[in-house]
Image 1 (spheres, helix red, strand yellow):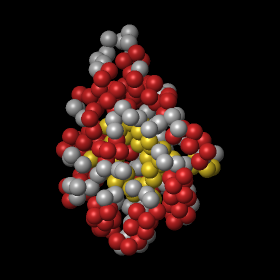
Image 2 (tube, one colour; image 1 turned 90 degrees about the horizontal axis):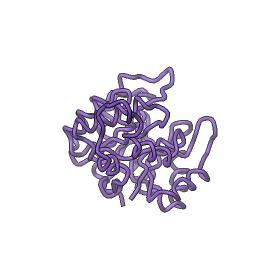
Image 3 (cartoon, rainbow, N blue to C red; image 1 turned 180 degrees about the vertical axis):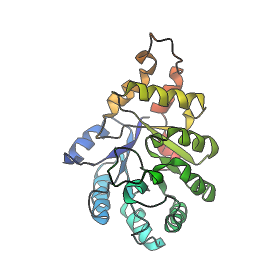
Length: 258
């Protein structure tokens, strides 16, 4: 079972990549697709709903801005469940709101009741206007404490604040993180994976590619070849079975996604 837990349909430079995304999904057992913020949110969610309805391997996450959008039970259900989407993705840093804002907390309450997964995509690349204060993973601690049944994913290990993410994963059963790797960034990969292993949280990591910024096949090869990257350096290594467990994790079942 290989599930890519971090993919997108759009690329700022290449536009809609539905056809290419379909080809990528064909090589996987499943994938999570996050709506973006480059457009009107209602249209982006509708487009994602149409795509996931045609791609049986894809599970969609609707983008919602709790500060600006209607977050009533009826509105949240209409934006997600009624469109066949299984979760909500938030861009707190880019859309300039605190993850634990009062209105955001109301959204999480609705999400928990509807059985939705909440994905915090507050990772690079950032625009000049993004507020990095709102990207720090420790801010999610209040949310995880308040809604212990709510499944939460921290995008890309919360980079660049991945040590905060490790503390969250160690503390909360309902918090996970996707390990999206850039194959060219060898030293970053080494520090991310080794630190997670030493923190004892490898079982809380979900495989992700960040597509279209990286290809799932390349990310899988990089992760499984982790110990070969610095083989002649005598630096600490990570057991291969731990690396394989991230790639082969049945993330859909773990997150309660049908």
